[in-house]
Image 1 (cartoon, helix red, strand yellow):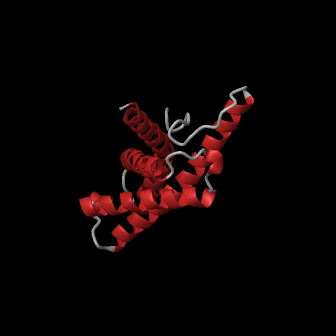
Image 2 (cartoon, rainbow, N blue to C red):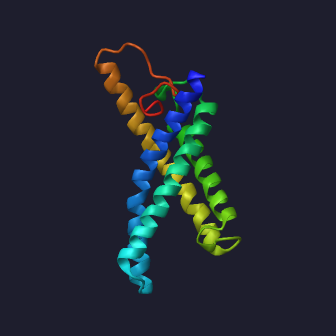
Length: 161
């Protein structure tokens, strides 16, 4: 049972981290959209920031879940960046597919749907790469402070946050 609690806490921690990273991108996207199409800048900027934060949280949670099952007992130093990015791509693509299937922003099997899937896939891959960089630096900090063990994916400060 302890392992499930750790996984849930880890998924929530990564989800919150991704949400914090995606929200500013949503605000920028809203500002650009509002400027180009003449929408009220403040309202659309906030709406897009919130939407991207929610999607970032869900994408991070999906990624953490996939990662915890796929790379169970490997430390972050044992994971290749390319493999980590693949899992982030899978999570982002899954998120985009779910968003399109749910009809977010009226997207269906349209160009907007394809853009949403593509954008979430790229954001997932980039966020996964950033997650690994942060996790490795946290792991190095823990090792330099005198901790002699290596952090497993499930037991890392990032996933066990």
